[in-house]
Image (cartoon, rainbow, N blue to C red; front, side, top):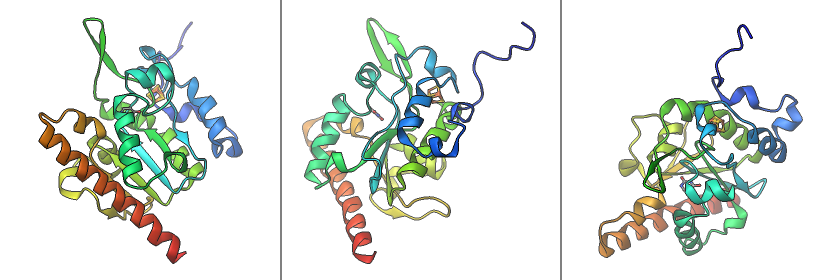
Length: 223
Ligand code: URA
Ligand code: SF4
């Protein structure tokens, strides 16, 4: 066929539901995202891992991309990083059932190492291509705070010059965007070289999550 076009299109925008009502409905968005071919990442992944959680959550947790477990189960943060995240959320007094959890890209990017599939950081183009899904999730959920887990998520929202280490744990207000708080990714805690640094990294992470919870409490009182 002539002019069949490239095998992949330029972004997820081509796969968003057409009707405005469906665009604001998480179930319709999830269904539409199942068929997304907005960037090449769908080709080697098992399935789309769309966000999951309370439909009108006050907080969205924004991660990087699904990992090996998430790719198999089709749900965000269910692998080792997710288990650690759950425990830290609990310590910070945040109920995972009350929040909405999603990722900057919805397909697992990996490379083989022996029999294992090793996580590969998504590129700027893939992150940009996938952004329409996140924007639609934010529009549908209408959160009061977005918590970015790690540099990929934070830089996707705040620009590539953003440094998590310098600005973590603070609520940042950016024009036209929901308030954002950035912290580290839970996998960075799992990668800590020894018990002492792991302990410390975990405590700092929980402290950041507590800041996020405190912001929402203040918000509620002011409302
Ligand atoms: N890491 C992420 O950033 N997201 C997941 O869903 C799992 C691991
Ligand atoms: Fe679509 Fe995002 Fe998957 Fe790329 S990573 S195919 S843009 S859902």
